Amino acid sequence: MAFSDLIEKLGDCKNILIMTHDHPDPDGIASAAALQYILRDLLKARVKLAYSGIIGRAENRAMINNLKIKLTPLEKFDMTRERCFILVDTQPGTGNNSIPDNVIPVAVIDHHRTRKRTRKSPFYDVRDKYGASSTIVAEYLFESGLPVRSNIATALIYGITSETQDLGRKAIQADIDAYFRLFPRANKKLLSQIERQRVSREYFKMLGKAIENAYVYRNAICSCMGEVPFPDIIPQMADLLIHLERMTWAIALGFFGDRLILSIRTTNTKAHAGKLAEKLVRGVDGTAGGHDMLAGGQVRLALDERERVQGAILKKFMKLIGYAEFKEFSSLSPLVPSGKGDKV
Image (cartoon, rainbow, N blue to C red; front, side, top):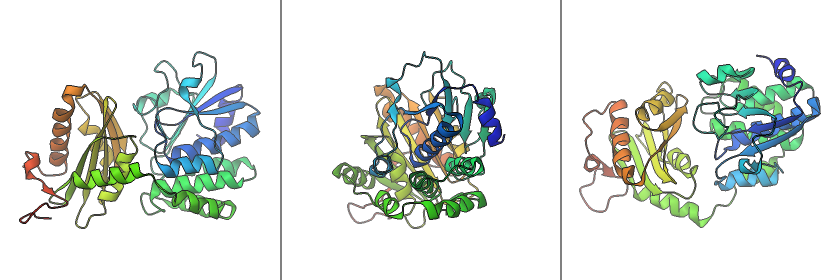
């Protein structure tokens, strides 16, 4: 569907609520903020941004504060009021957003594989070849003819680069074109401050925990981090672990509330990590998704099920990447050896 179709579908909407996925990342935040700017101007509508969960990463908080993006916790809205809902960087039925089950969003904009429930929305623009949802919304902005404000350009640039690892992961020509078209309007000083934001002691505590609990099996590295203070520390650690030499796969797992959070990274461009993550949570109360080289998921579970489910998922992960012989944690070598005789 084209941008003009989106404007047509939203023509009668006077109160619009844009929602991203829970614990939003820069791509979700940027695409939501840019879409808000476009719709406010073209539709003269009341457009607000909502999120659920925690904005834990220091860079994400710096992005919101420095670029003056107003995100409101979803619980502060009366969801029974008549309004138009839009999902960006997520889709209905994925389990990673808090849109009510009985609500069909007017529009869905995302760069992941199209979900069945998404097709019920009057408008959906899902481009799973794109590296970032920010690129899709950037193209809307260019087509709208509106001036590209500096804070919006900066947000979209950061959304694209963080999602594609500086255009090196899953970026296609559309992502590259959007980046270079936005770059002249971006505030480079603020962008640098966001990317190099100081982190808390809690981050280093989690980093130490991830390394201490990291183990290697052939070309795969895993870290079972236990309790974590916020969910997005898990993908952050997976991003770091995949850089270990000779590793093709990395998986990080941790518990947040009543959920097991998992994040997968691979250097194999044809690995279909998203489909692998979906297989990992099949048969349990979980949801997952992703792309070829990165994926994530979550499983809802009772306290007494934690270790059993985590162990079962790790074993299943090893089997799916080709190591059916993997049986127990004792088969793993610690990343940081405690004595002689360790393999790594």
